[in-house]
Length: 276
Image 1 (cartoon, rainbow, N blue to C red):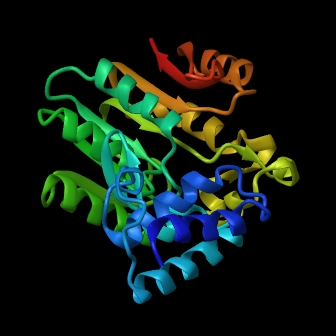
Image 2: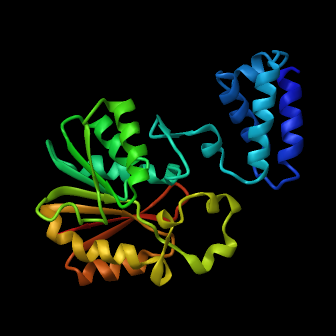
Image 3: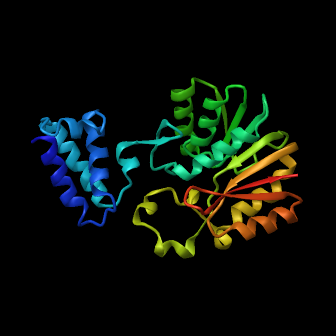
């Protein structure tokens, strides 16, 4: 079998299964199996694939037909131009979350202490440290399995001990620590809206996605507890749901913060910055 035949076969399975991007997914998975860049399929569509590659590819395509996300199938996801290992123990990093990295880098002064809550795969913490070696970056997560993935990503991309990881619920491991920047992509999806979500999302860790009180419970806790952990003129940066602008403005004001909300590339409210 040659590349063009394998792709045609895979696309023929993915399309009827309701996959929105069948060609892209088929190419990404085949490139992973063959260990090549996707452009090779354009320059060399008649390249032969081995029988072992074909079998492995078809197994992965069947997983995608079952709506398992591509990142879990390949085990990797690009974020901030870095390749992160991902497993079903961590949320898949999204492009819109790169805004948190941009904001953390903007607000962090020289040698600033930065804390990444709900770190998951470690994507935000690692990307911040990769861009700014002067920063002291700390990260925490309530999931030991997620922290294992995050530590592996940090070690692979930065070297050992570049980011300091802690296990615990939000600020729990940092009773005495203060930070110039606190950043977090918390769970903020309302479970009541789950019926309208893509099937792929239910393969991801539910605790990293859904929150009580209409999706606001974790964000409310962070806003109310953050002041005790921020240095003077420090900033709290949160990813938020597209319908949460008024909520975070009100909660931030009640906690004594001034609040700015920034839109993502789609024009939707995505990040809230809390400061003095």
